[in-house]
Amino acid sequence: MTTIRIISIVIIMLALAYSAITYAANKKVERQKYRLVKTMYGIEIRFYPKAIMATVTSKGDTYRGNSNSHFRTLAGYIFGGNKTSEKISMTAPVHMERDSAGNTMSFVMPSQYDINKLPQPNDNDISLHYSQEGYYAVLKFGGFANEHKIHTKIDELKSTIEKLGLKNLSGYSYLGYNAPWDIIGRENEIIVQIAYSE
Image 1 (tube, rainbow, N blue to C red):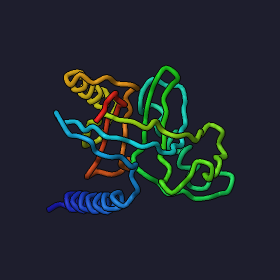
Image 2 (tube, rainbow, N blue to C red):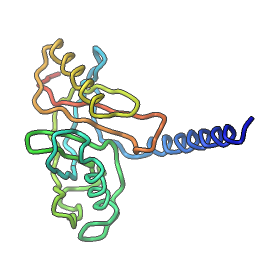
Image 3 (cartoon, rainbow, N blue to C red):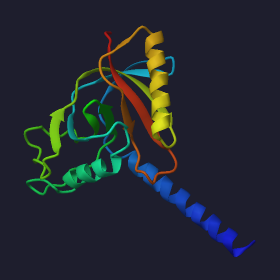
Image 4 (cartoon, one colour):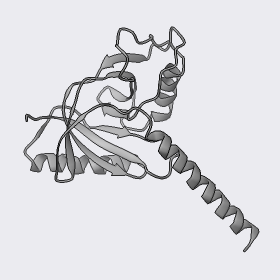
């Protein structure tokens, strides 16, 4: 066995071990609360209560176009870039949306916070607000998500919603649950608010 081959195998083994560790760590991160209402035709219907979101918006017509700068801005806020220098725990998922105003990224704030007790961001580009409570249709998928894959999954969810005779009440959002360097166990979702009653 050549030296290059041995080194390659060692690198792959280390990458897989690191991914397994981060996958286990991700499972311990607080996730946005919801209640599963129904599973059908490969999608889930969920009820989401309102949650506090920290959001940044900039010009752009893609979901992931400004994701690096948005992430740095929001990470700066939760890592102490706020009026009280308080560190706030990371949660999952990260929300990404786009509309005529541009594209946005939102972090969900930990559930123990009240919006009036959250420290104010140092960065004026960050807004704190509540998410929209209601019923949402959700399509889950794995692997790495690029712009093409996101749009393919949006079309898939849109088609399923139409078949079920459901009406969407918002634009489609992409939700990511993993750090960029995670290799295994990647979780992604496309989500849209719908008119639904139990």
